[in-house]
Amino acid sequence: MPDDRFHVYDTTLRDGAQQEGLNLTVVDKLAIARHLDGLGVGFIEGGWPGANPKDTEFFRRAQTELDLKHAQLAAFGATRRAGVKAADDPLVAALRESGAPVVTLVAKSHDRHVELALRTTLQENLAMIRDTVSHLRAEGQRVFLDAEHFFDGYASNPAYALEVLRTAAEAGASVIALCDTNGGMLPDELAEVVHAAVQTSARVGIHCHDDTGCAVANTLAAVKAGATHVQGCANGYGERSGNANLFTVVANLQLKRGFDLVPREALADMTRIAHAITEVTNVTPNSHAPYVGVSAFAHKAGLHASAIKVDPNLYQHIDPERVGNDMRMLVSDMAGRASVELKGRELGYELSPEISRELVNRVKDMESKGYTFEAADASFELLLRDTVAGERRRHFEVESWRVIVERTRGGELVSEATVKLHAKGERIVATGEGNGPVNALDRAVRLGLERLYPELAEVELIDFKVRILEGTHGTDAITRVLITSSDATGEWATVGVDENIIEASWQALEQAVTYGLVRAGHAAD
Ligand SMILES: [Zn+2]
Image (cartoon, rainbow, N blue to C red; front, top):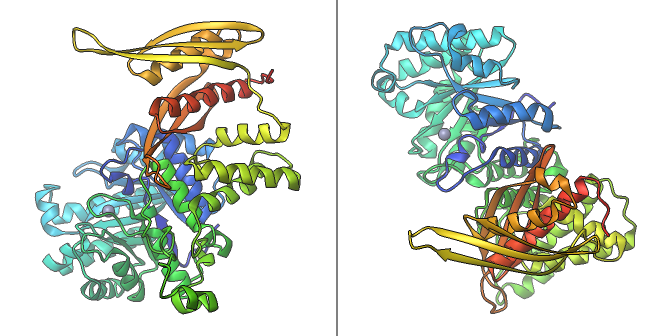
């Protein structure tokens, strides 16, 4: 249970997911929630149950699949509709039934938005807030309120904006987060408004967007003015220019202002966590990101180099180790070390020091080639098993595969794959068709092996992510493919890397099938 005096509230899964090009599956969201919990944030806003089926599913699955150590889940939703009782509003019911201990209600605090967007009266808007907050409180949930367009609303009608705060606080909302929804504020003027809001005796939070490049600065200014709840997103994700980067906010407050927000060891893991989340979102990490970017503490050789050797603190604002970064450390090294130490234990393997060392070296070597194990647990476990066994062990051997893509006369693209495999002493030749080459290969492999391993009928390829990685040492760009598969009881992810996208996909696919067989309890040949 986190300290309630100051809240770190993450909204990556709701507001951050609005980022253009970001498309999170439920499995992605669960994975990101685990990472955020690992950082020690207090609250994770999971989405809008009832309004979005994916989010409803997230909350349903979170109850059994998420074992959060620090964070509490918050369900996001709107106040009741005008003219109905909160108790009768189906969207309010979805919040109530989400199982989340906290509900964050978004409400209008800008008079013109109430009249033009909500098309109701200022009085009815206040009644909607009062009724919804008190209803959910009575049902046993904690309620936060996001006061949308608060700063623009305050400029338009300060008395009404403050009335919204008072109404929500009196009805039982424990925090009212002031939202710079359009992201247009600058720190000094924002601080003045926060200061006025704090005078209402409502507990004030802050939610900033980065349209002026000031989201983090605005958040810090709000804290200085009395806000005790900060909202933001992992890696600054969010629509337009993004939301306040929660990692930067947390590091600034904890390391520069002495706040005790997340456990010290978790902060020292922040760089890894920031990168692990980019593996899930499939967004290329910003190497210049404050604190967690690969370049955040990197210095150009030359002028500073010799002085840095004498005293690195002359050229860096903090010791990078405090956020898990390094003056010059490849992300792969870092991820490799952490993966082995953490995941080996997570998977329940007691590794001898020799095996650990060998596994670290293999992981490092593979990560330097572009593999990532942060988001590919199944590939990591296969590698671990092979390392423990001292040899590569598989349930089938691949003689060859081939895939053709044909554009038919009708203009349709169809793919056909043939695989030649050896398993249980048999040679198997199988063909599969699909709407793409990977789909065709997947069908061919499973068709070929299903007779020997009937469990494969349950295995399904559910997600496929491709990332082009820049080549290193003068080589061509390489492609990394992450495949997520599922069976009746869960999901797993595997990774493949090659200059050729189909070869990369094949590697991930072969491991996906192998891991599916391991899960089904089959021993390797
Ligand atoms: Zn927002």
